[in-house]
Length: 249
Image 1 (cartoon, rainbow, N blue to C red):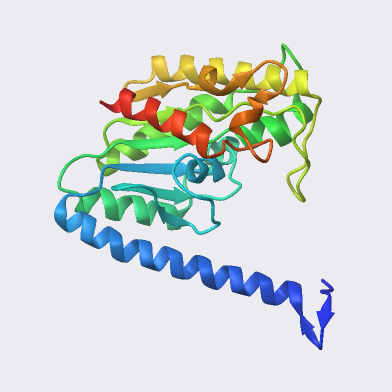
Image 2 (spheres, helix red, strand yellow):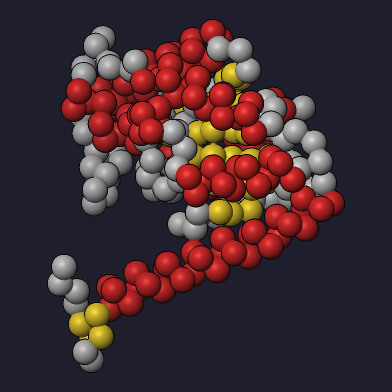
């Protein structure tokens, strides 16, 4: 790969390593704070998933292990698919974080899992069409995730429906938008329904759907609740968090 240079320096490569170093330091600092919270019984929730798990709980950074508000910890998988977790499970590095928290916590804590937005945005339209979406992987995703949560000692295991697709979402690098807006809405609604059904049929699974809080039929996420046409902004996250608190209470 060729990088632009300034005074002989590969600026893109330097930026890449600067970000990697920052992410490592954030994850390391979060781990140290986790030790304190585990010792004092201060771990309240654990989130597992893609970038939406970060946006729903704090300002976004790309680090793998993050802390939200008091007692909320985020195991950030990056651009991971629901399909990928169904096929291959949770990555080993993420499982290590989940194991540490569960085994050292003074009491069972809820595990909230949010994946699927990238499946809708980038992949389902390649392999199906409205009325014919290939969603057989959702069953494996729910069962394997519940099994992991129960094995480690999380309770409950909550499957959070990701935010809906947006009409004008821009394609980003290796994550291009595939399908027009009505097609992606169809995929999202079918995925949402399939996840609800599988959770209802799976002992130990709970289902949390907050779509109606943020959805606008013309735009996907309401214009006032997103800044990038993909993730919720601070105002949108506040609505989600209030609903999560009510649900867990």
